[in-house]
Image (cartoon, rainbow, N blue to C red; front, side):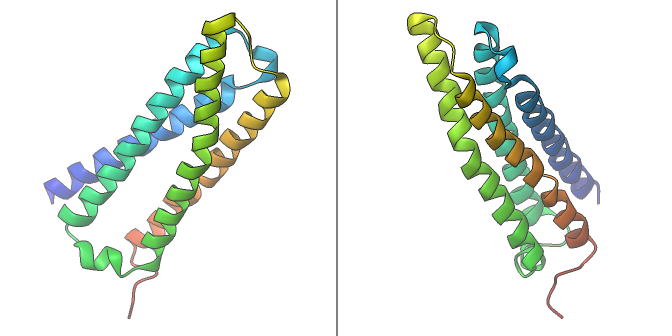
Amino acid sequence: MTQDAILQFLHISAILALVVFITSEAAICRPEWMRPEIVERLVIVDRIYGIAALAVLVTGFVRIYFGTKGAGWYWGNWLLHAKLAAFVAVGLISVVPTLRFSRWRKALRADGSLPPAEEVRKARKLVMLQAHIIPLIPLAAVFLARGFGGKG
């Protein structure tokens, strides 16, 4: 029971970190705030967001395989598959802003240029899309934890 509680704590902590850093990206990725420091900060915040996402994934799989309910219970539930699909969707959406942030930093360091406002707006829309999908994952999780969606 203690092991399961610790695994749950680690998973929830990773989720909170993910939420903090996607929120930070959304807050600072604005055309009206774009300056050299913001470009540099976006790359760092996005990296930490990626690390947090990896931690969410790893701790989630650790809970599946080493938690008290067991892998069979989790894999047999469609809600786990829905959570993973939403997580993959967020991950795929995040690729575009990540590449843009890196490209912006490269241009900034090469010639001091800042990204065009329209490109910043497009990146922000993708960050906001991620931020709006992410809450659906714990919604599925609370129902999953209570046995909804299982066979039988």
